Every structure is written in C-alpha cells, then in structure tokens.
Image 1: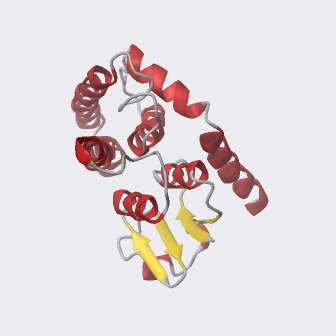
Image 2 (image 1 turned 90 degrees about the horizontal axis):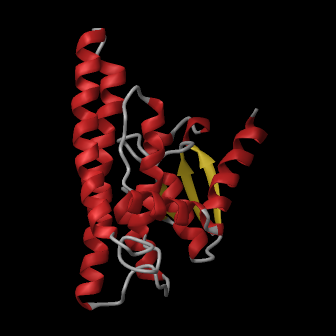
Length: 204
C-alpha cells in the first residue's frame, strides 16, 4: 500500500485521484499532523508518496513514477501521444501551478492593500491567459488529450478550485468547464475528496 502525505485541497488531491483511477490502495496522512514532515521532504511541500522504503517528492515526478509501475490508459505507452501526455502534465505542474502559486505568495507577502490588489490583478491576467491555452487545446474533446482522462486533466481540475480563495476573477472557457465537470464526476475524484473530508472530520 502507498502512503500519501497531503494538505487539504492541495495538488496532492490529484495524486490521490490518480491512485484511485488505477485502483491502487493508499493511506493518506495530513502533513500538519506530522511533526517531522521535513524529514520526508525538506521543502515542506506535498505531495509526498511513500512506497515501501522509497520516499518520493514532487507531484509530476510522483505521477510518472506511479504510471511507470502500473499498466494504465491514463498515459499512452509510446509515440507522440505519450510525449503529448507528458507535456500536458508538465504544463499543468510547471506552468499553471506556479501561476496560481503567485496568488498564495501575494496573499502572505504583500501587506499594502493597493499593491496587493494590483498584484492579484496581474496574477489573474496571467492565469487567465493559460486557461485560454487549455481551452483551445481541449476544443470539442471531453478531456485535454481526447476522450480519456489524463493526469493533466486531474491536476488542472484541482488547481481550478484555488481561485475561490482570492479576490480575483478567473475565467474558465466553456471547454475547460466541461473538462472540469467530467473530472469532478469521476468516482476516483469523488473518492479522493471524500477521503480528505473524512480524514479531517476524524481529526477534529
């Protein structure tokens, strides 16, 4: 069984969803309940995945590790389709995730109200530009790469929830909203959200 360290609503939710998509058993632990979490990941970030004696960090690397160990249809086996799938994961993890990260940074680091408002506005503009790219790539398809859900779709669905925490307007196109609804309707995503909710209620 895998052990996944998470924070509620963080990108670790995508890792858990992918594990459920593949029917892999996982136990989840809230990082806030672990006193020595930085021993697992000195950066202090989630997800952290433990597989036996192996401790894995970095969300995209963890996803590729899981997909490499398990037969699946989430990532094509080879050819340009596989490269497109990997690029989509990296776009989500290395481009969209940091764009949302700017919002979290601004909320904690900027104290002047006018400066913070301007920073949020610029950050939202950058995020909306990225969502327009995603919307165009989805087109008439159900998901980013076609009619089969991919890890990138799951990552992007998790990130899309983060805009609600800030005084910004995030513009998701029609195609993107359809993709997000498709992911949210999947049993794997519902199971992951329910597991975090259940875990939090037991911790109270």
